[in-house]
Each structure stands twice: as structure tokens, then as C-alpha cells.
Image (cartoon, rainbow, N blue to C red; front, side, top):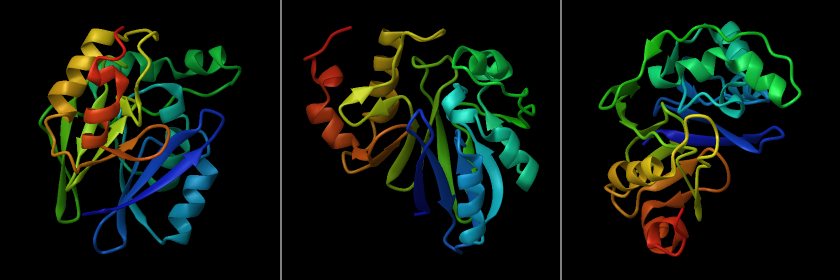
Length: 212
């Protein structure tokens, strides 16, 4: 299993992740949000070589720092094409929250359901999980999943943003996440880690206590 380093950051309280290969050197960064200087300082202190930038989706809080990370590392950017419109609209997304941001560098690779992404000896499976955004994906590793904003501890991603849909999101969770073993650790885009089993048993959106 890769080492998972969670870095909460920014006004959106978003979780950026560094996945570090077993050799302790090679790594990828997932969803570099607002505090790019923080991520780069951690990369330097851990003496990591960033091989890729993986994006679970293209909302501002998850892509804010992509340009700075790309410039500093030269790492290729991976994004599902269904979120390309959101990604290209980063300047207008930013203006809606009072920020001014330059356009992001174009993605280098398109993610697709069933893709295998390599990090050292480990491979992660891409699972297409729309509903929070049109191109949301989850990245399933050895005993864990990077769930983006699809599933949180005790909650789910919001569906009131452009391209969101409640029923689609619930179907994505049931088909792409609840099919994983209960002990699978869930690293979400916001908040603390959880497990598939805990959410299956207690998440009100999944137990039927809450209906959209």
C-alpha cells in the first residue's frame, strides 16, 4: 500500500493528498487545492519526485493549485473529460468566489472508467462516479479509495452545483464504492477518513434516513 499523506488546506477546508510509493521517493499529488506553497514545501521536505497530478474532479477547491504544481514539477495532469468544461472555466469559477486566477494548463491525459494508474509497484483503478460533478472519479488502491467529493464521513457530495444530480450520485456510490470491502478506507475531499463499512451502516443518505 502506498503511503497516503492528507493535507487539509485553504478556505474550503479541502484535502489534498500525496501518495508515496513504497520506495519513499516516487509520488503523485491528488487534487492540489488552494495552498500550493504548502504542498510544494511538503514535497520538498519529504524529498519526493512528483510523477503525476491526478484530479478526482474539477471544482475550484480541488484544482486551484494545479498550475503552480505543474510549473514546479512538470508532472502530467490527469482529468476525466466530462469535467473539462469545469476545468477550462476555472477563471470564472474563481471570480464567483472573489478570486482572480489564470487559466489552468491543459490536461495531459484523459481518465476513463477502468483505467489503471501506476505508482511504483501499486496500481490504482479509476472508477467513474458522476453526480457531484459530471466527471467525478474515485481512485481505488490497495485497501483504500480516494473518493474526492463523492462520499464523506456521514454525508455525500453536494449536488446543487452545475452538472450535479442527486440520484446519479447515490447510484455512483452504491455501484462504485459500496461494492468495495467494508474495511476499505475512504479518503475524502473534505473531512476525516472513514470506511466503506461505516458509511454503509451509518450514513443517512445510504441507510434511507435521508431522501433527496
